[in-house]
Every structure is written in C-alpha cells, then in structure tokens.
Image (cartoon, rainbow, N blue to C red; front, side, top):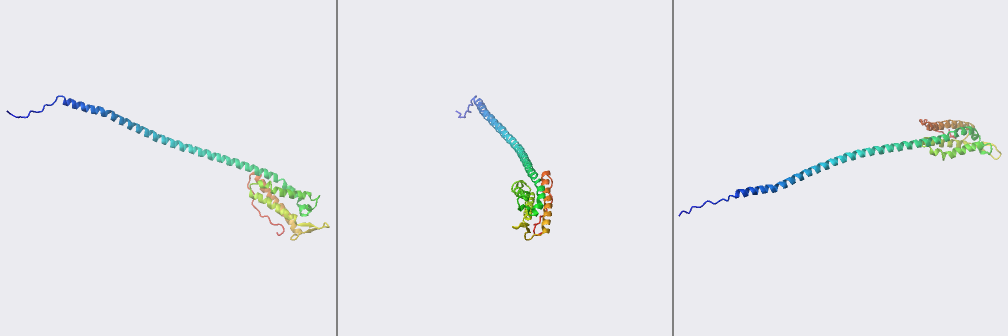
Length: 225
C-alpha cells in the first residue's frame, strides 16, 4: 500500500476571507487617513490665518503709530505756535507800556543834571521819572523776553542814577559837583543818555513791530568817560 502524501485541501473560503480581511483593513484605514488630511488642512489654514492676521496687525499698528506720531507732532507744533504768539503779545504789551516813559525822561534830564530832583516842588517831575524808571525795571521790563532789551533798560537806569549823583547842595543851597564830575562831563553825560534813550526806543519799537533789534551798543559809565 502506497504511503503517498495526500495534498492538503485548501478551503475555498480562504481567498474570500483574505480579500475580506484586506478590505476591512482598508476600510478601517480610510477614516484615519481622511482625519489626518483634515487636520493637516486645518493646521495649514490656521497657520495662514495667524500669519495673515499678524501681518495685518503689524501693518495696522505701524500705520496707527505713524498717524499718532504725526498728530502728536502737529499738536506740539500748534502748542509751540500758540505759546510763541502769547509770548509775543506779552512782549508787545510791555514795550508799549515802556515807550511813553522815554519822552518823559528826556524832558526831565536837564532837571536831573541840575540836581533839581533833590528839592521838593521843582524836582517832583524829575523824581517821578526816576522812580518810574526804577519801578518799571523791576516790573514791566521783567516781562520782556529779550535779554538785550532788559539789559538796555537797566543800563539806562544806571546812567540816569549816576547823573543824578553828579550834583549836591550844601546847607546854604549852593550846588557843588561831586568828585570826578565837571560841567563838561555833566553835559556829555546828558547827551549820552539822550542817545542811549534812542537806542532803548529802537529796541522797544522792534519788539512792537516784530522786527530785528538794533545792533548792540556799549554804554559808557558817566563819571570816567
């Protein structure tokens, strides 16, 4: 009796089962692959939205900052213009108040040079002019923004004060020139003060008109020049 090995019987369902198994794996892998694709698309869209939003925000922020800086500069310029205009009006008002005092001072200079300010009555006008010169130096003149104009008025006051000290009177009413003074120096001092009054007047008129101030001049000290 032959012991030949019989071929193994193959189940007719095996291929079917195998095919079905492959199909089941494919069907199970399909949703996962689709989910990954959706996630990738979502992430890409989100990244694009974030990048686009960030770019839009940066552009908007830059433009807004530029506009705000421009508005601040305009506001600062407007405030500076207003401050300058107010300053000019204060200067003009002070200069207009000072200008009429100069002719009054010119009229009483001979009285000051003669020592009339030392007497009541005939020296009242001279004393009034000298007191105004001093008081205005401490009030209205201080409002002027121009240091040259303030210095010019202060120097005028100094010159007038020096001239007022040129003469003294004794108990008998006789006048005497103080040390360092002569009749010629008194006359020269009065003339110099008149010229310096014109210089101060030019300064004040330049402030009122908004023009260039006059060229600076040096006032000489009265007794020694």
